[in-house]
Image (cartoon, rainbow over all chains, first blue to last red; front, side, top):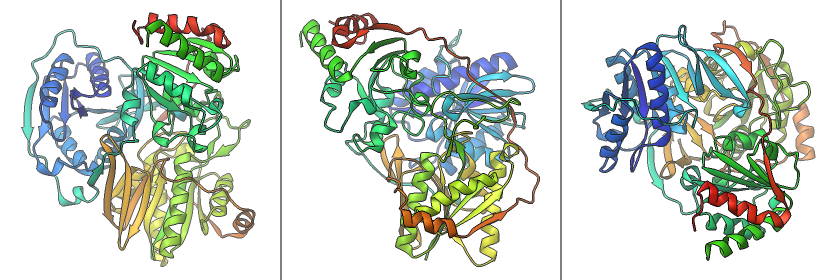
Length: 329
Length: 257
C-alpha cells in the first residue's frame, strides 16, 4: 500500500499533488501496490468534487478524509497525526507527498515519529527492491541516490519531476471519513491567524503560465517599467533573481530560486539573469526558456531553448512595441 | 532573559557547475569557497535581534569539520557572543544524527546552567536539502516546532512568528521553549563591522565531539545531472530581434491575436 498526502486548493488537488499521485502510481505499478490518498483540511465545494474527480482520474481507489474541527487551522503536528493514523490503518509501505513547504514539513514530523528516514525532493526511483530513490541536492545541481529501506518509505516528490498523467482506467474513488487521534500537544504550533497581503504574489508567480524574469541586468529599482509592461502584455507574473531582492529592488515574494519560489511556467523569459545555481534551482522546470542577456556564454543562455543577445533595456521595449503593434493593443 | 541557539552549516559556495569527489560521497569544494545558506544568515540576524531585545545571549552552533570555525566566527562578527563546534565528519551524518548532536549540546548546556529557550535553524541546508533537522531536533527536545518562518519576536514567555503560507502570511504564537526554522525574506542580514570582526576573533569557541554512533544518511552516491548540450537557438541580437521573439510567442501560444 502506498499512501499519498494530497494538498488541495479551490479547484481540488493541486497540480504538484497530482504529480505525486502519478509518481506513486508508477511506483505501485512496479511493486504491485495500491494507492490511497489522504486529504486534510476544510474541503468546501467545489474543492471536494474537484478533488474526487482528480483522484478518480489518477486511479485512486480510496481517499481518507479526517473529520475534526481542530484541523481547520494548519498545524503540522496535527496533520502528521492524521497521516500516521492512515499509514497505520492501511499498513502502508510508503508515504509520499509533494515537495512543497507543507509536504516536506508534515513528512518530517511523520518520519521522526515513525523513526524512519525521509527523502526530500525525489525525482525518480533508483531501485525498487531494496528501495532507493534519486533526489535533488545542492538546489538540483547534483543528484543523490539514497537508500530508503526502513519499514515505511517516506519521501516527497520534487515539483514537476513528472507530468500528472491520468490512469489508464479511471477509478471510482471511495471516501473514508475517520476521526484522527489528535492530541492537544499537536495543536501547540498552530496557525493563529492569516493575513492576506496584497503585495504577496507568490501564488500568482508559482501558478503563472508565463513568467518574465529580471536579474542584475535590470540595473535598478526604477528600471522595471519595460519588464512590467512585458509581464502585463503576456498576462504573466514577474520573477526576479536573488541579487534583485538582496539589493532591495523588488520584494522577496517575487524571488525565484533555491531560497525563493520554484516555478514551472510554459514560458520563462529571464532578462539580465546569468543563471547561477541559486536561480536555476527555481526555474529549471519551465517548459520553454527564452533568455535575454548581453553575454552569449552566460549559463542561462546556454541552457535556454531560445535567446536574444543584447541589452534588455533595448530589447524589451522593442518586443513590447512589436507585441502592441501585432496584437493591436 | 531569553537565550538563543542558532545553528548554521558550512556548505560549498557553488554558483555554477558542481564538481563531485571521486568516491561520489561529497561535493568537491577545492576550487570554490564556503558559505552558509541565506536562510541561516537570516536566522543569525533574527537571533541577534531577539537577544538584543531580551538581554540574553545568542550562541551559534555548527555540526561539521574543524574548518566550520570560519562560519562560526563570521556569525560572531555580526552579533553572536559565543560558538559551539560539534566536530564531526558530516558525510557520515544523516539528518537524525545532526539533530541528535544539536540536542546533546542543548541538554549539556542546560545542565551547566545555560538554557536555550529558542533554537533557530535554517529551513533546509543548501547542500543536502533534507528539510527535517529542525523537526527532528524539536522532537528530541520535546518542544514545539515551526518551519518556513520569516520573522520572530518575543512577547513575554511566548514567541510570535510569521511566515508565508498558501493563503497569505501565517502568524503563530508559541510558548517557549521552541524550535523555529527560518526562511530568507523577513530580515536583511547585517554586514560585519571591523570592530565586530576583531571581537569575533577573540570570542569563545567551544569544540565538542559527538559521543554516539551515527545512523547515517542512506546516501549511496552523488551524481551530476547529465550535462546538457546547449541547444539554444539564438533569435538575434538587439532590438531587431523583436519580430522573431513575437513570432515565437505566437507559435508557443502564450499570446494570441
